Length: 339
Image 1: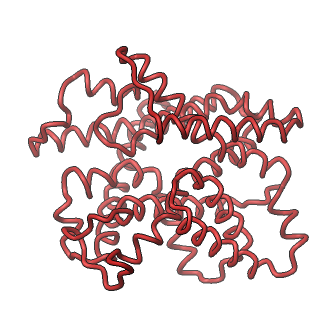
Image 2: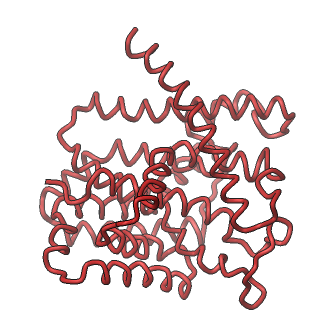
Image 3: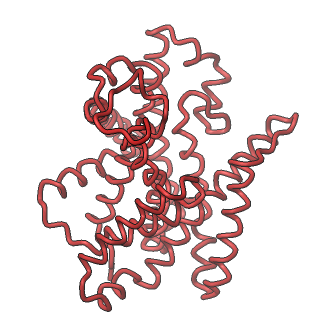
């Protein structure tokens, strides 16, 4: 029994990638050179305030990954590593194309040196694209999922949640408030990897627990007005994050938003199709979008100087490239696995 369907999970990923692009485009007070907002509050675009909920993008991904990991808890180690390799293959294709474009456009930082290329390729020093940091964290979550699931299965879930929360708060402190730096690069890389893992594992664990206890099924059985409660929860998550702007609340506002969304039965076919489409391309868009709006083609992305125009152009560019990435991925997969 699956209380969150594959389509719901894919739509959540569609929302997550929409949140990610919105966060990166709109969560800034330095917008004057990029777009001209129609509505402002105290000199700031209204979209700036709404963009804080978009901090939930990574927690949504982690929640979905944790939920899926519990569903696949009995898969073999070989299958788990094949899934990781497939993700890495997509990443390496995008990395290579990014470096090619960097060479063509004479970008001083991409590909930089062979050492820099290797650092990005093997995820121990990611310097080309900021959004790529999550590749390392996601793979660490996949590798450690068996041990996290074993802990969940022991039914010490209150203790596990408290421990997971404590790890999150400590990791957040050292990531956002008091970063740790040493004179030894390898030590810095290890510390950074552990801190990023620590700030991501809470939502992953929540996904595991939601699947184990079929939380959404039980909620739907107890609630008479699921649609109303769902809408209220989604609005509450947005308001909470406007009031508390700190990213520290993202896993909690993210969970509230996820719960609200899953309580609603979407009855708008067009919206469902859009979210499923975004979910299908979410991984590629995540790995591609910064190259367009920040590194290589910012003038194109912000050419309309409108709030809506920049995100439409960005999605169009990323999804068009996503088809190319998928085509190359299929060719390499056939070559590697059918050899």
